[in-house]
Image 1 (spheres, rainbow, N blue to C red):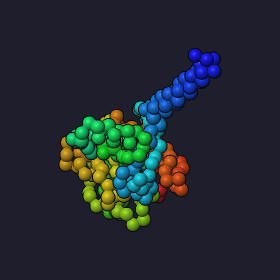
Image 2 (cartoon, helix red, strand yellow; image 1 turned 90 degrees about the horizontal axis):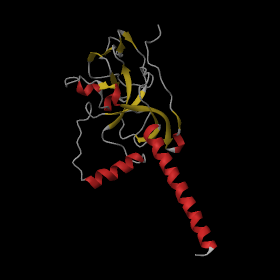
Image 3 (tube, helix red, strand yellow; image 1 turned 45 degrees about the vertical axis):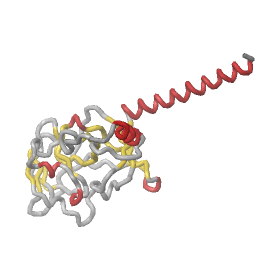
Image 4 (cartoon, rainbow, N blue to C red; image 1 turned 120 degrees about the vertical axis):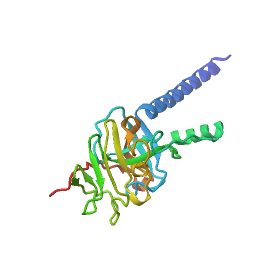
Length: 218
């Protein structure tokens, strides 16, 4: 083999190793640091619309706050889901979910309204959600949106959260499971992370605001 050919092969090996290293680093980042999810429904409008792709900071145990938007695995709470699709189709769907091209049927995006120990109810005489007896202003709701047409009064147990979608009239959330085991609560250890930015569509790309939810002033 000529010296030129050996040098060419050595160059291609370097390129291949470099590509594999980039792919491995990308996979590690996606698995442990930052994930991309596609919003599958209108449940978080007006802030997040169907088809939006969001970058989600993956976390372990986090100091969650009322008002945080979180991405979570709904299996065991909102989703007693078991796929009956063929293995190859599930694998293809998994690749699409990893690339952020399609949403997962068991991954949801909602807002934390109640933390462990909170009493959350709706609605008071003023038509607003109450936290520990105090009305809260939910400025992320679209104008004219009722906080809830379903009445509820719950106390959030340790290790769980009470989650609602912003589009209250079109959101499958904790309210849908009031009469089920667990009462609509979602375990904190099912939270994957919190959205930090919208990456698609480009004309609306940018950092996402983090809202702290508390009693209304006055």
